[in-house]
Length: 232
Image (cartoon, rainbow, N blue to C red; front, side, top):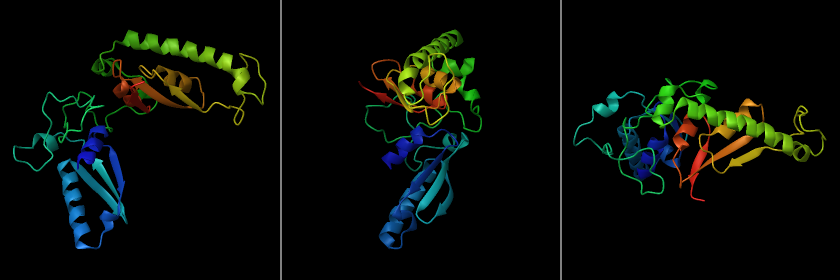
């Protein structure tokens, strides 16, 4: 169950978890017993099983606080983590046999979150969760917009090798764009990713947040981007 607990930590309230396993459609008693243990455990995680087809099951993590607040001492495992447990930064630490419940300041259901592209521009109270001020965030965004224009101008003669163009010219349509994947090795707030999208660049970005600095990976994920923590 420890891996399901980790999945619960990663899921936003109201998020979905899809699992495929022979256990879900087992015929022998031993496998059926193991499946019942998993089924009961997910209920204790406050997950609702929405559907099952053959060997695939879809659960939804609750977006209701009552499921956690109604827990009492002696409730079936897993227990709620203590208030001192940091559910935001458990990286490079042993997995804990407890769930965060509503302890996180980012505990906002996906139904209540802004949709794309609005979520790319966090509000003042959302930035405050990550210890940021609007002017600091805006300054970072503007610097990356300038950087993207400069990068694209310098790289254009190289990445559009089969469609020569001069810096400043409009980008040709695909398939001439030879740049597809970008690795931001120090993603910070995810500003590079945002600037690329806002400028209409058709690229996929992996945001990497170094473990040696402040952990802004939750902010990057809240903006709708993908990323990882990594010790370079």
